[in-house]
Amino acid sequence: MKIVCIVGSPRGTKGATAALAGLVLSGAQSAGTTAEMIALKGGEVKPCRACDTCHAKGICPQKDKFNEIKDKVMEADGLILATPNYIFHVSAQLKAFIDRCQAFWARKYLLHQPVAPPGAGRKGVFLAVGGSRGAKNFDGALLTMKYFFDALDRTFDRALLYRGVDGKGEILRHPAAMAEAYELGKRIVGESS
Image 1 (cartoon, rainbow, N blue to C red):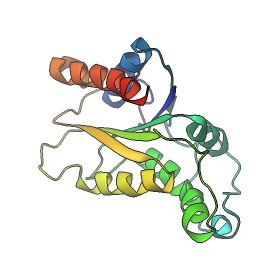
Image 2 (cartoon, one colour; image 1 turned 45 degrees about the horizontal axis):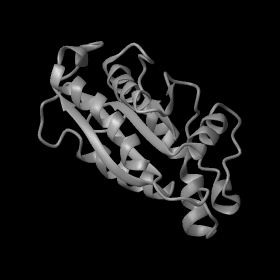
Image 3 (spheres, rainbow, N blue to C red; image 1 turned 135 degrees about the horizontal axis):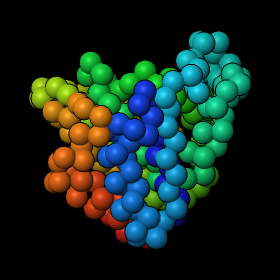
Image 4 (cartoon, rainbow, N blue to C red; image 1 turned 60 degrees about the horizontal axis):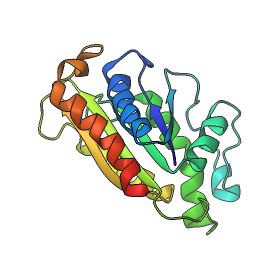
């Protein structure tokens, strides 16, 4: 099994989001899987240009890191998206990646072409941290995840969402969250075996 985790944080691998993702990946690796973290700090994946090439051909014509990342995502059994929560949604870095995946939606729903290689167990997991403690803090992002994972022919398996976590690496001061993240990584592998 192989897991790819995309961290959409301007802090890259140095913030609370990446720390949380790292715990999930450590748990997965302890259960015997291969895991890779890809950090989107900004600029690696350009925003969608609304050229509609994806609607006609099922591919995005832009040349940037998206194509390399997309190939890794499609080869992976498990996909984790991790983001800080900015104004009730995912970061701009992660949103640029999600928007460029419109090509998969077009392939699936407009062109009626296969999106992913055949095989069961392709799961999607969402991780998010946010400084606000509001009850609806993650509602917008969760709706996006539901449709994003569907477009990629993945089951939206579960989400770990932590409110009141704002500072750089602050998640590491929450032992229950750390344990939950590590166990999630192990569980993802165990359920897919």
